[in-house]
Image (spheres, one colour):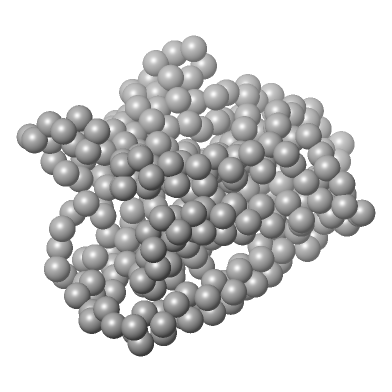
Length: 295
């Protein structure tokens, strides 16, 4: 996913006034195809090394994990497929292809790319290919293609935020030991956001073009998939209550900030995948909480 984001940043940072002749568009199209093939191969190899290589393997099988991790892993699939679909669609548009076809091909490629992960899961003893994961992937593509067809823009985008939690130290093999592993594996520190552009939806002129309202979902107290274990390797673990968390906050859509500065445009593309820290109202553990600055 990081590789796709990096190339997306590169494509979006290019000079839009570049002469759109046939030779340039043909070179762009070849670059897109070569880039996608290379990134697809490299990212799956990287994912295998980061997540799967240390686990035992079995014959391909399916597994129902729809109730695990309070569905945080499903939101990860949703988020990833949305952005891979968007990146692929934008790349084909950049290469001069028809907008409608670019969007459809991008959505299909996004679904195919993220769903390839199910092959790894299907051959892993501890997991299996998941129908609910595939469903989350489909919704990610649908969110992208649906908005393109209905509005010709993304009024609602997905954002991600992460903060360190205390839980990986209890199960570093499951929740990660290094920062990069925790970023992917520790669902307690992750929050996924639906970030909606206020002006685009309400048409209120006084609202800044870049201001979004964001609805977040996270979880806390997770050290196991369906349930938390009481002990591991004969070591007693503390009790942690598994809690769903809901948030309301503001956000910034940096891509709606107009600038001719290439450096700023590049920076805006980098940060726009991540939720901007803002005060947030949280609802969890049957209480309302105010967070002065939530990330």
